Length: 157
Length: 106
Ligand SMILES: Nc1ncnc2c1ncn2[C@@H]1O[C@H](COP(=O)(O)OP(=O)(O)O)[C@@H](O)[C@H]1O
Ligand SMILES: [Mg+2]
Image 1 (cartoon, rainbow over the protein chains, first blue to last red):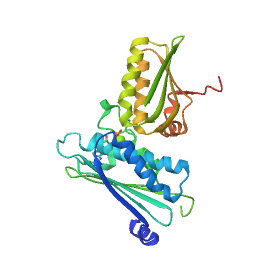
Image 2 (cartoon, rainbow over the protein chains, first blue to last red):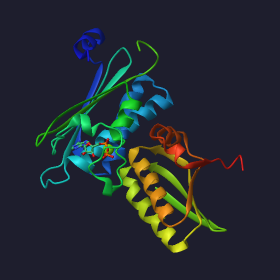
Image 3 (cartoon, protein in one colour):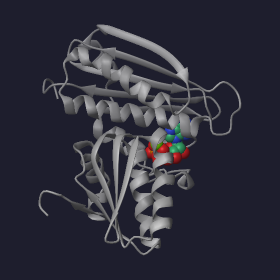
Image 4 (cartoon, rainbow over the protein chains, first blue to last red):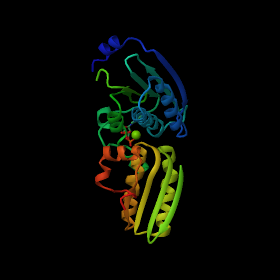
């Protein structure tokens, strides 16, 4: 992980957005549309954009399905996006839900805590395959933040 | 999500049109399982040509119908998957478990 170095090299984000919305399943497609509209300014290919939408959908769905499974309070998702001049888009998906005790285990293919809900346990695997970077920060009882990075175009890589 | 069923010679074809995510999956699941229970088909064919979006909730749905069909004694295939469906099925290795049919090959 050379996050700091990357940041220096790429400089500041050229555009950013930040929104919050209720952790309800109707908002899965809403979140995809927002990110898709935002990332479109970098002129991605159809398949690059489809990949990013899929990864965002995974992270947002996890907030809805898992993060607030036992809570009765305000269930909210924060969505942030940044684009950089080098063709990178960074999307942050954050919840204040139950958190993940063992992140490494949660990220294993097929691992799910909700098999009865027909979860495939492939959410993190899809994020990893469809993005160039996936970072997860989580604290039990506090919440989870997933940071997805996608690079458009061949440059850099 | 738009769901269309047709039954012909014991083959139940379910065509989905729309975005297959967690939000839409519950309704599709109920609808397909009810059709399997009602028709007892010998084969379930999921036509996914018009599914423009599919994430791992869609995978969960396909895997779940694989199990449901098998326990009902029916064969299952996925027919004409869209690019989105095929990409994610391959990532999960589902293409090795479930036969993919192309209607053009016939
Ligand atoms: N935002 C979150 N809050 C709490 N737990 C989460 C969150 N995201 C993921 N998890 C945990 O990680 C596991 C794996 O997630 P994922 O790979 O998306 O598979 P699935 O959603 O199909 O269970 C989940 O079953 C859940 O236990
Ligand atoms: Mg998931």
